View 1 (tube, rainbow, N blue to C red):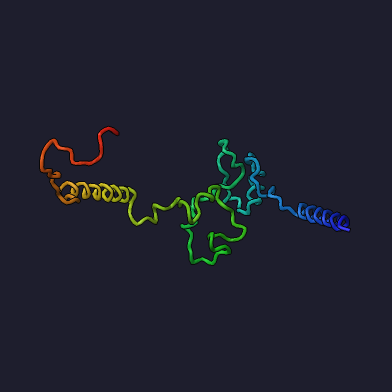
View 2 (cartoon, helix red, strand yellow):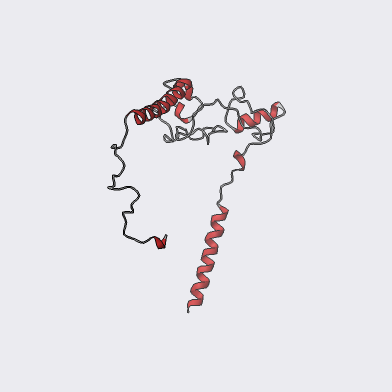
Length: 174
């Protein structure tokens, strides 16, 4: 009685897996192709990425493997306007927008290539203020420890006689 049910379940599971494997999305069309060597390849790559031919410029063919991927300006997620009506506002991106090669490094929780333009203070001032704070607090602690002792002064224990043992246990165990 349970055997037909088990066979039916196995066949149904196989059918689900075969249907789901047929509808897998391929990323081949979006993978970068080889570096364009002719003008026709350059125009085809510009069309592939949805750019005008005068806007399209690939990365130099230096062996890093970027191929025909377009060289985009270095603009991180935090440098984009937060008031623009983005299609994906949590990433400041529109649908179909080309991502930068280094987009994985320039998210809102990561670095920004243009942080120097938006920084309130220059880099040298921030580093100097850090070292002044660290060494200033350390210097205050050392000076305070030297001038203001943190324990109550005490004198050595006073015994009635010198060279007398004031304990009750025997020396034979030591």
